[in-house]
Amino acid sequence: MSAPVHHAVVLGCAQRRLLPEVASRLPAGVCVRVRGSGGGAVLAGPGWVSAVIRLPLGHPWLEGSLVDAYRRCAEAHVAFFADLGLAVRAVPPGAVPIANKALDWACFGSFGPWELADAKGRKLAGFAQRRTREGAVLGVGVLLAPVDWALLCAAFARPQDEPLLRARTVSLSELNGAPIEAETFVARWQQCLERAALA
Image (cartoon, rainbow, N blue to C red):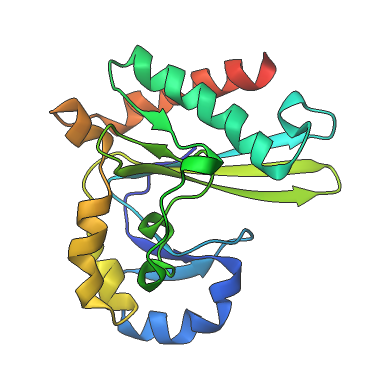
């Protein structure tokens, strides 16, 4: 689990070819890297927390399809956020909003099955998954505080998408009505996921 201090643009594996041009548009001190799973780009850094959940072969979360693993992970998160007093829902496959193709490049521009939203349908958390011979690796990214969408959009030469991303996303601090301290949140989040994955 991590709560990065410095910004970094993280591309999905299918976006690898974009790395040189994205890097050329970033200000000094902001790096770009490619993750092993698919999906759109994210802006890691202040306001962003992420977790990597390693599940061995035979783990209950891996029974069934790829989407079933997301459902188990989503259910654990919904319960965790409810304990924090925050109303969050998981969006089932049949209720995933129709994607805006113009925002396909950004992870938070659309929903995947079982990703997390608030009551207004704004995206709060995204999931990624990579299957291996040993099991699977689930990635979870949560918006802890408002994100600098303008920075991410500038890296992709798409400044017109910034208001759309801002309108379609929400952070935990916004839902809470007050800032949430990253270290305290990450510690509680880790305990929650460890309990859920061992259940």
